[in-house]
Amino acid sequence: MTTAADVPLIDHDQLELLQAALDPGELRAMLVQLPSAADQALSAINAALAAGDLPQARKAAHVLKGSASSLGAARLAEVARTIELELMTAGEIEACLPDLADIIVATSDELARWAERA
Amino acid sequence: MSPVMATVDTAVDERAVPEGLADARILIADDDPLCRRLVAGVLRAQKFTNIEFAEGGLSAMEQVRRFRPDLLLLDMQMPDMSGLDVCRQIRAQPDFADAPILVQTATVDRKKMGELFAAGASDFLSKPINPSELIARVVVHLERWNSLRALRDYRERISREVEAARRMQVELLPDPITLQWAARTADLRIASYNRPSSELGGDLWGMLPISNGAFGIFLADFTGHGINAALNTFRLHALIHEYKALHHDPGALLSMLNERLVRLLRIGQFATFMYVVVDHRAGVLKSASAGAPPALLVQGMKGRARLCDSSGFPLGVERGVRYRTSRRKFPLGSLLLLFSDGLSEFPDADGKRIGDDGLLATLDTCGPALTPQEVIDRLCAAAGMTEGSPLPDDTTIVCIDRRAGHRPNDGLRDRATTQPVASSSCGGR
Image (tube, rainbow over all chains, first blue to last red; front, side, top):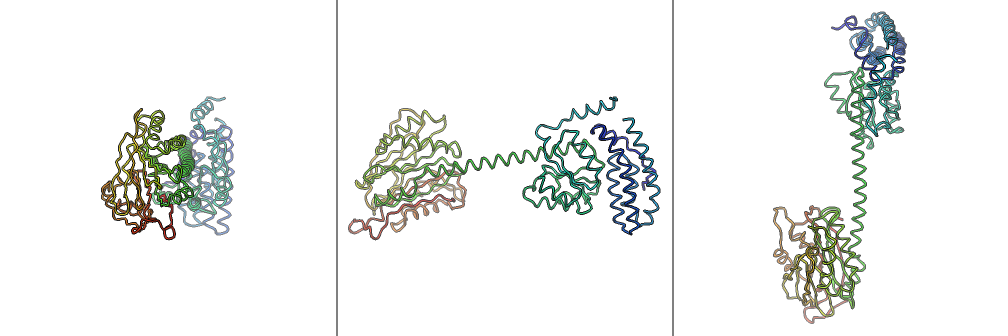
């Protein structure tokens, strides 16, 4: 089974594809926007678990998976995918959330650096 | 500008969207604002300018009604409605039955992919979004959609124009009132059948009032069928009416028409033509033929059906041809049938053609009790021609019947018991 740690933090190939296809300012803005969107997803998952709404938690993870993967945040997308599709119980998801929070921070730093370089 | 950015600019410029697509209406339906922005960013970088958004399935349905997109990019999974349900509902709308719907999905599950296409998706876009794939698929589907619409628009326009031409061509045929008047005046009955093999045909028939109740009947059949042949029928109609002074003289009329058509028609185009002047007072037919199928004539009550000579070059083939007028008796009790070779050459279910002999034999079974319309119906049936059967060639039949006014014992007409009538049918119309 693939774990999040096996997946690189950033999918550089994906970022290069976006760089070739997007207005540079627009790409930078989206890369800056991703961490806050991820924070919102984390809050939504927490809120859903608190309400005992497991499907809602999975939906929030699904949305995060989509934007993270498309914006090159590979490890973040993998954690989101795990929450959405592989973790069976609220407890398992809850246990995964600190990792998710750490990966959001690491992704945010790396994307900021990448955006500066670009 | 950094070297990396220069590379980006070059890449964008090289992949310019084909002309005519940039203003295509594109609807992006996705509940994730970042994904909407990313897809829109890629499209805008390629100069697509007409982009709108929907944040879920319900708003996608509303936007489809309001914005009428040329292409829809649909996320597979949205909170209020699944992408598949949106897809099915959009496909149920006739205007969007063929519109491109590209579904974005991260799945590689074959069963789910099958469901996606079964729901009506035109194509899919894999996630994570690959900008080149996105643009390539959007462009190819927009081009297909544009071609399809252009083809439909063209077909609809041509259909309207052909229908207008068909109505005009029908108007060239004798109107029922004039036909009725001529039939009454000459104390006989006229029926006709005219059906083109496609919307437009190369057959034309007409009635030309002359004087003292005499009238001329012509039947022309141009080579081929369809628009070329139909346009030639309009030319011929105009020419025939230009030479009104020759309407009483079949040979002279055909000779003149031939001279004109030789100059008008392109090589390979010509018309067979039969013209008969019916003079009921003299009990005489005067006719001339230009390669037309022979008319069928029953002379008097006891006469048997026989072929009238038909010879001569078709009209429009050779200059200087002189056509000869033949005279025949046409007493009370007689019947004359003109037809185009669409009748005699019609292949029945076994591929057999009735031919002139078959028509003669059938005509001999048509007693005077039959109306001319019934005579035509019987001939069509004998040829294997039903109302719905497709015709390989334009077909026209004209039947002029002097039998109803005849009483076998005294040879007098009985207007109280027999009504001269004119009827016509245009098979299938």
